[in-house]
Image (cartoon, rainbow, N blue to C red; front, top):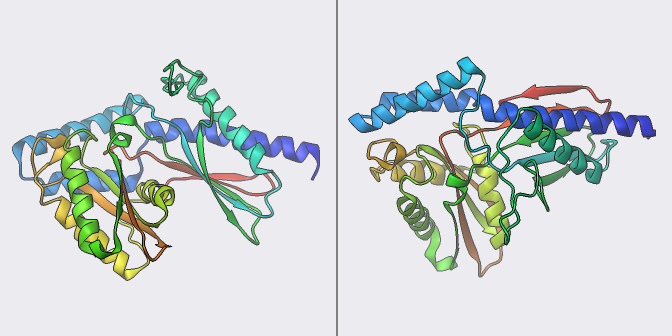
Length: 299
């Protein structure tokens, strides 16, 4: 691996991060647009219909003006699938993602949200200590890199919950906790949105799974039939709450429920809930080992 190759690849990753962050903030995916349109067709509450029409107009204006869908540019979260043959070390990938995030914030410009946890002083152009946040997956027998950018606004992120259930609580306990979480959240996370649920593993991993779940396209189902059945049950249950768009009442409280799971200890039953607002923003890039790349929206 030559220095030139490393430098070029680092620049490609940086450029991708700069593009993905802004693209995700301006242009919501088609599956989400379709889900919002379907929600308008299902809603019977007059107030709910007006809210969904306002959301639709919001998206139209963002398209027409090539502007942000929401003023909260969120915190930059990246999901990276790294092939074992990709000729750029993860440390260099992270540095490139950080540089791209900073560049996008300055060049667009975007609102800078990142602050020190205790002093609340701004730490830079949407970067700081351990920010942006990057989740890693390493793939054998592959030389590529997939990068997914999922900017996460604070309104929905504040409505995040974790509970260590006991195994005896079973599936009913999981449903009860998710229901209590969404009812308690009310209109704060800007419904209708995507509810991500993480089950199993450990406390921290359940939360990671819940966050991973919100980044899936609307309409996808978990490959495990039992988990897919739980997704469908929760979707029906949450839409029966009457919370409705923006918490003002109606038929459509959630656009989708996505559940991710992991095996766990015999005495554990951790469950996490992570909410994604109606502006469920995401954008992805595929980067080959030779530096060629492609931007996509369907992953």
